[in-house]
Length: 260
Length: 89
Image (spheres, helix red, strand yellow):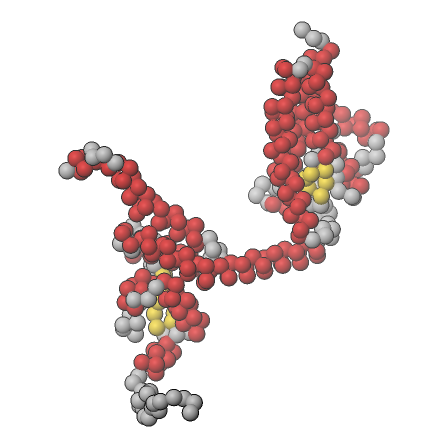
């Protein structure tokens, strides 16, 4: 009989819709609604547990009712918890000797600038240089790849991430793989990190990379799972971008010097 | 709460009271804060196929407080004499 019903016109779409409305949607919607409650609120677990005890036909309506509960009971607590967390974070940041931020708005805009610059830089690197190389030849691709290399080495915003005396990574603002924050030692340390091991003795002879810089750089390898010593995604992208654009420069230079 | 010593869970109370979720849950929260109710969770070892539910149980203070509310009033609540006619004359 079920087979006959399903063979009717429009039966499958109705069947699938009813599975969605009475099967999948209530649970998914309820979990989204529960995000309005504070993380440690027992109401989150309670309502999930109750969902499975409610008869299936009543579930969509019961879930819709929970929007009201969450809005008036959960959301104020969630907002309060967020406010407290931000205030604690700000207090912690200000007490941190490595922090010299000037307010959450500037920090947020800085984060936005990082988030915005990453896709653009990746697109430029992955698509721009090879496309220019093929379409316009080496004379056009070379300046673009050099500009890309400069962007990754000196301009892309990221945290400084030089090792601090406390054994953590510096979180002040910096630009580019070679750059550091205003602390001169941090600049040296970041620059030192990109010097290949074979070249390091040569660099020590001719620069002011002192022993403390070298020791700090070697020490800060990053402990897995520890946020304070883990390098950020933007630093990883900057590193990959620098390597990639270096390769692009070499290829463009090769194509320019030795045209086929 | 139909039986003072019984444990109830939220949906059960919704059905018994006929209230909506948006009304009942804030009441339960306030009663918990007042100490009229205590809550707990079902033992996961005793149940299968569903998550443990949160139950509510009346405390002694809750029984006393709700008993006082539910007790019949010694005097009729309606005023003995109601004036009819215009209020301002």
